[in-house]
Image (cartoon, rainbow, N blue to C red; front, side, top):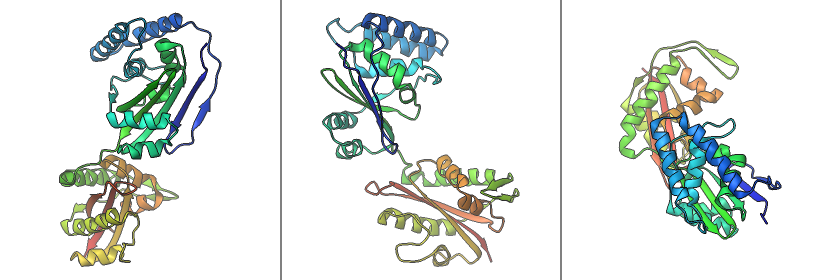
Length: 324
């Protein structure tokens, strides 16, 4: 008899619990429906997607009748197929040993966040899926497609951890935290500058205030030094704000860096792992957007700093100024 239980838990979002009666499909019927639908979906995809899908089906089909397929293959087959309103993707999930350890701990009752921390896995976003069924691979595939398609097809996820114990299967899908390296700072700063200037070149609304298109910013290494000092302070002391751990403010930091200014501004952020993400975050915030669009500023400097033991892992600062 099938045990009708499957659950989902996402870090940072309220967990949901779903309990539904089994659909009544026999395992062989479910497997047939899954394979037929998946093959049809793959037929219209790229040669790479079709090749990946066929390889996964062959791997699943090669499992002895008395055995169980690798759950990663089941997830990736559903991932390529897509389902409902969610399109498939050929970006397959890769198994991660630390996520395996976290899945084992979570299956033992440890909270997901604590399990990930104990395993030494730092993630950006993650979802945990718990399935309990004696219906075998066919039933697992059916449940994945019917109830977890949004997570299974989420392109942000790139890694997976698995723990299986009898009828119980625990999966953890994750987007790993992968910030830029310190030696990539010049390139990343250049990307931020380009995105900011693209934003400034168009009129936009920041909250209730409308800003006209304005002039592009010129990069200042002096303002970069001020930004780096503050980003480093935030990372080292695990906080985000405009007032430094020493009580100093953006105007003081600019002066301390040797910048002779008529006007000074600053944007800060934490946790974003790319230039696009940090600039989009600033543009979505009325106060940060206003600073970014302010026509008084003509120069800027950009920096980030890392601390793997801090809450957010990466801290950003962008200093704005107009020189005397």
